Amino acid sequence: SALFAWSMGGHYSGSVAGTAYGAGVLTLRRALLLTAIFTVIGAVVGSIGVVGTYSRLLPGATRVDIAAAQLAAALVTCVSTYLRLPTSTIQIYAFSVLGVALATGLHVGAGAFLLLLVGWVAGPTLALALGYALARVTGRAAAASALGLRWLLIVVVLYSGFVLGSNDVSNAASSLVGAHLLVPRLAALYGGGLMALGVLTAGRRTLERIGHEIVALDVPLAATAQLSKALTLTVVNAFGYNASINQTIVGGLVGAGAARDRSKLNRGVIRNIVLNWTLSPLIGLPCAALASLALRALLGQ
Image (cartoon, rainbow, N blue to C red; front, side, top):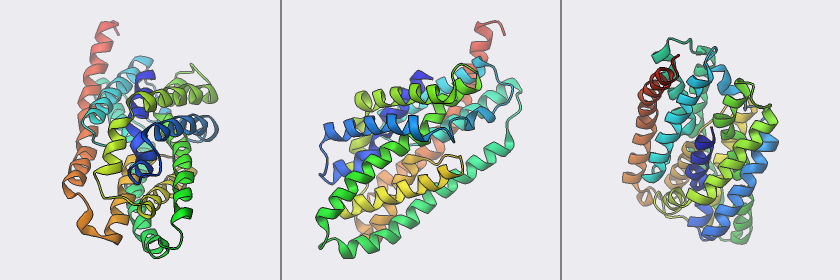
């Protein structure tokens, strides 16, 4: 659980502050520090509605089973961070849980899984549409309100850090709640603190990718993408479920970039990111199955 929380923090710094960093509004150090602080706040204050979601995916799972799923998800996330390919830890973890179920014969909570699938599809789609629509508005107002948009971008970055804590801490913390090791509030604090540590120690790689390599960023475009992402995640979280913070920021960037100038989109980078969205969960599935079998054999279960 600690490894998974740390890996998520390092992986998601770009989705929180990469746009502000790429637009020159925040320095690298300030971007990482603000992300870390507001991730902890979001985890503690805003995550209770979703912190138990993944505990319902695999009814009857032992602590060994959940540990195997989290270990596989953490390793796949670390590899994606090293390769600078923003992915969805939510999807990786859900498919890792599915891998454990296939290996052990456990029943998967089909209803919960289907609702998660709806959130995954809706997240980037809604963010792309919002990014496109908002870019039309901010594009017209950019010349008259550049200073205001800089402050808006900073505010939205802070809010995005909050949303990272509220949206993604459940991946690591729900196992502790489901295993009756910690109550939801303490589990959220535990996960949020470790995510913040991941931001500070391993957050630069995805910060560079989001900030500089998807589309050439200015302040209006960066503010538009961040706002579309934050609004999308807030809507999905309001129903007690998660959307991918990386997929929504990429969706927002692509939508806003397409509204402004499609020729400036880095299609090669976007293609590789989207491909990794598909491959990383599929890799997590067999890794979790093997980890579950290995841990059960090691412990004589």
